[in-house]
Image 1 (cartoon, rainbow, N blue to C red):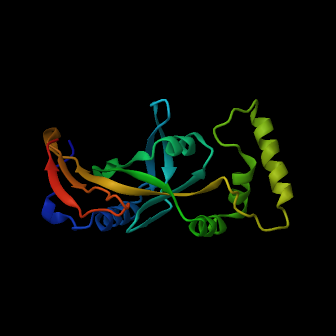
Image 2 (image 1 turned 180 degrees about the vertical axis):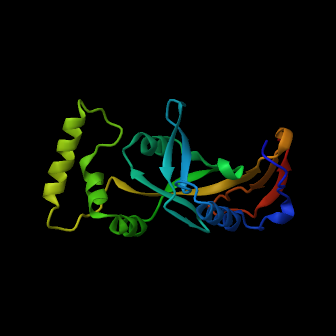
Amino acid sequence: DYGQESLDETHLQSDPIEQFKDWLREAEAAEIYEPNAFVLGTVDEQNHPRTRTVLLKGLDERGLFFATNYLSRKGEAVAANKNVSATFGWYSMYRQVLVQGIAEKAAAKESDEYHASRPHDSQVAAWSSQQSQPIDTRTALDAQYDQALAKFEDSDVPRPDYWGMYCIIPTRIEFWKGRTNRMHDRIEFVRTLNADGTPSSWKVQRLQP
């Protein structure tokens, strides 16, 4: 039983990005573990869907940002098909946010700034792993990391050109609130992208559970 706390259109801000920020802050205040974790869904060039959990690393009026190796499975999938989804589940709060949109590489400056903000050893990790590629043993993986760690022991770690930020430009954001008897509240914001890539205004509608 998810309770009787309702979610009405009048409870939400007119800008779903701002509303998402509110819910994220409330998830943080509720001490949800990794409240910025979300399940990223992609479709590769063979039309095979894949999901994996990544961390939200930025959020502004443009969209949602995450970082990864461009040559990873998700990077290759985005290169083949920019349509992606993101699912945030704060289940102890009976809340979920579903996002659909277009993933684009962020500007190099933004990727550089985020890379520079990471701990030194995390920066090294970006150099030590060929993400998603097979490797024989954990020992071999650790050896790659140790080699990279030694290389950058006494120096700054530059951002690899194959690693950086993506921005998910949302075209659909759904706010889900669990209710008794599975009669859940679902409020959806939808927009389209114009020919020049700029977004249209948001339209709001209620969905049946």
